Amino acid sequence: MYTTSTILAFLGTSIIYYVFRQYAEYLRYERARKSLGCPPLSQYPSWDPIFGIGYVKAMLKALKEDRFLQFQSETYAARGAKVWTANFLGNRMVYSSEPQNMKAMSTSHKDAFAVEPIRIANGAITPFTGPGVSSSDGAKWQASRDLVKPYFERGGFSNLDRLSGHMDRLIDKIPRDSSAVDMQPLFQRWFLDTSTDFLFGDSINSLEHPERDWPQRYMMKVQAGLRVRLQLSSFLFLHRDKKWFAACKRIHEFLDGYINKAYQDLEDEKNSGKAAVYASGKPRDDFLWTIVKRISDKLECRNELTAVWIPSNETTSIFMSNTIYALARYPEIVAKIRKEVLDYGDKPLTFEGLRSMEYLRWTINESHRLYPVSLQTVRACVKDTALPTGGGKDGKSPIFCAKGDIVHCNRYLMHRDPDLWGPDAEEFRPERWKTARPMWKFVPFGGGPRICPAHVMVDTECSYAIFRILREFKTIEARDDRPYTATMRVGPSSKYGCKVAFIS
Ligand code: HEM
Ligand SMILES: *[C@@H]1O[C@H](CO)[C@@H](O)[C@H](O)[C@H]1NC(C)=O
Ligand SMILES: CC(=O)N[C@H]1CO[C@H](CO)[C@@H](O)[C@@H]1O
Image (cartoon, rainbow, N blue to C red):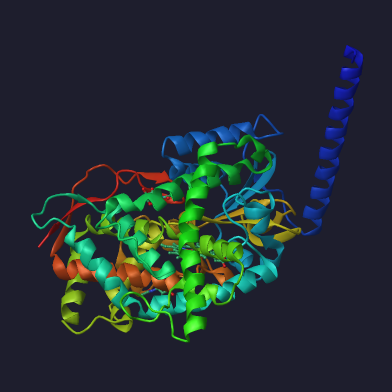
């Protein structure tokens, strides 16, 4: 039997040990900070120095009330600083909205930062996927990056033919009688169709068969669970959602169907000496096909596939939906793009043709600026370092990032910062791109060696969609008066969708 006094003695020793360890860690932090010449960071106030419950609760509340974007602006504004720190469940978070820090973290200081510790090492995502291009560092990352690169380069430049059939089906779904339509789910299905086509060489065709979008619905469950798990971090054991594990399994089975077929095609190609083709007779050239030729392990193949598939739902489709949402509110911008579209005439639409439409490209950039699909670049700091700016009273001193800190570079705030864009920063005004030289204050796709490999593809697909829609319709009308309300899934998306009418 334990007596009360042994229990008390045990508790007492644990507390003393804890306090000592915290104190030693504090001294180490302070010494390293001073040796790098960094002033202390502005801090989110908290009554609980151990878990930072106050901050955690404020964030969860904002998420629940669909006020996460406002929460970003407010927490920064309340600190009166572009860099600050907070305790989140015992982890030190560093937040920055300074372009120079985004640049340093992505380029010159990139070796002091990593993604594996926050995505893989703690087991957060491993029930679903292993290391792939978006979740690994170092040599493993480089190998995966090389593997996916040729695919995205080719995909971005030459897929207009492949897009056209899916686009025809999307346009067919738009009412011709000026009645309202919610474009958000249509774009999501369009994107599911194009991405399964590009990734696996076989489209789900959910625009014609809406019930077939189940992989996205399961993926949604998987992603919601992943987000919880990534946030729980050291408290991962609390997450035991059976439905989540079941959803992972369904997605694995879905992907394995394609993977098995690809290995079978490869085998047949070897045996027959004839190149694998699609039902249409065209040679196979999808993403999966390029990777099965280089990876013989099925599981590894699936990891590479999911690493590309994870960022693919709700990115391009939400971006397109946001762009149409904005256009529906600016008829004069629509008129200018439509003029470019009509001036292009009937000649076959090419990648270069799309690139030549200046106003359309300005509009695309303006949409990325105001509605960035990815809010922040997040990395774990793996060795003590100083990022260039945002610290001290004048906000110009370097800032200290200690090993173990989780550093967030916020692009949403940067993209709307009047100090960087002028007083009309919040306005949707494509003309600003006539003179804007964005550099690191505009990084919708990140930058440096880890820049989104799909960035050319995304802009091409979005310009293509707008071109085709505006060749068909004269104007777009908003059919929803509520202000844009972002709800957080992978990134922010419009809570009320994108209800508009197209007028021919
Ligand atoms: C509007 C659409 C999209 C936006 C705004 C976007 C943005 C981003 C951003 C900000 C990053 C992080 C860059 C960094 O860490 O510095 C990223 C990484 C990545 N994105 Fe995208 N993305 C989009 C669509 C896509 C699509 C459609 C795919 C795939 C089909 C994709 C695949 C990836 C991959 C694989 C990475 C990881 C790259 C690496 O770590 O080396 N993205 N994206
Ligand atoms: C759009 O932004 C990119 C940076 O992502 C920039 O390189 C490009 O020049 C901009 N395009 C136009 C037309 O201003
Ligand atoms: C996070 C996520 O998975 N989002 C969407 C994926 O696509 C479907 C539509 O097929 C949406 O309903 C999800 O919200």
